[in-house]
Length: 116
Image (cartoon, rainbow, N blue to C red; front, side):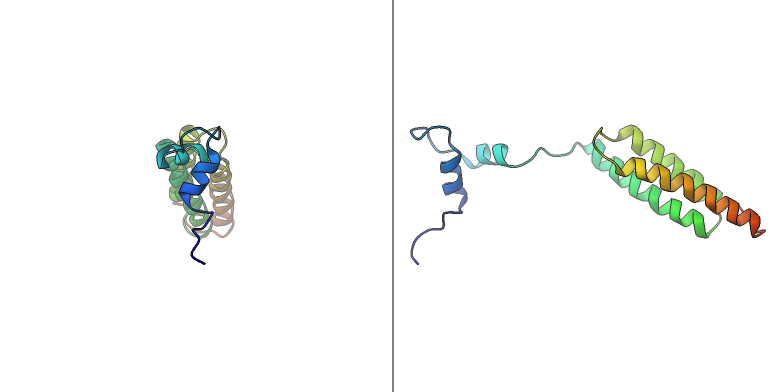
């Protein structure tokens, strides 16, 4: 019971050293080796813009479709421009925004409601 856990950072840093006689890693070196790279601020902003575009695309289905639909398409396009290569959410946002605008516009015209 009195033993220290083998899952402490110090123990794991000792295990991560390259050679048996090498000095143990510092906590910063251990974090740099084990933790994944952080996202850039542009990718975080692109994710937030994509989420806003998805919300506005859904709003365009139920209320006047053109104002929120145009804004959703603009935000989705901007998020695609800022996004990295391996993110799918901005592409999904552009599809949702475009379909929300299109389907909302068709339904509003067929129901004889205001599109603006």
